[in-house]
Image (tube, rainbow, N blue to C red; front, side, top):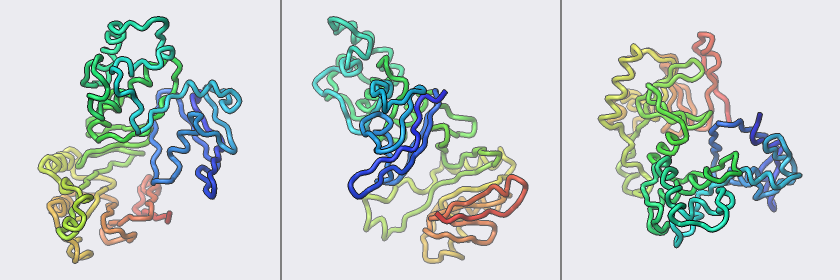
Length: 336
């Protein structure tokens, strides 16, 4: 049974259609990620699903009932915003269980009992704080995790909605605590439709064996002119390189797809001679000479072109690979 469902949701603001006939459904136990550019309607959709906004058209169904006709059903949906929404001069334990009636606490609140009850919850989410600490004195990342933990202790909530804004390591911790785990291929399933993969890892999706190698380089001029946005860890590290070599050996140097950010050194020289070379390009050169593959997809160069050796640069296009399922060697593009 669908625990939460939106049917034909349309939400408008002056001069803007934020959501246009959106349908989405969630089953119990699933984790989903809603991704899009600024202004795409992510927050608007979440606020419609939680009853903050009322759509002009459509229905929101919660546990099979129409929440537009019974607004009390929205109490079953927890919403954790990316902004901190805690009481700084109250303790961790107090923030964790507020409002007390939703946490099953009735009558006079015993502070010691409250703190005792908070300990296993803080341990479950690996929040490194004491229950009697003031929230204003703990780290931002701990405050964010505390907000998520707070939503899980409220008795009414069947659905948790979260807009994340924390670091990769903290997100990884959160996913592990949510029941997701790393596979033998270093693949972390971050949701029921999105995979988080380490550089040099191998994943199998829809029967395809895919080698993923991120990493690139930023030229010295760009670093100088844009010191605030270039990434210091762009090049593959020694650890990444070891993972790549291990993946090659474990998969007999044979893959269906190669997915990288940039391309081997010889191809940069031939196709993009004005571009800077990096350690990553040299590692990819070794990979290219060592493996067998059907298609190699890459980006970095802000281009949409097909190149020799079944290599495809993607920028605005998407690549359709259904033909490969039948042993074909043709990949088709589709313009967005």
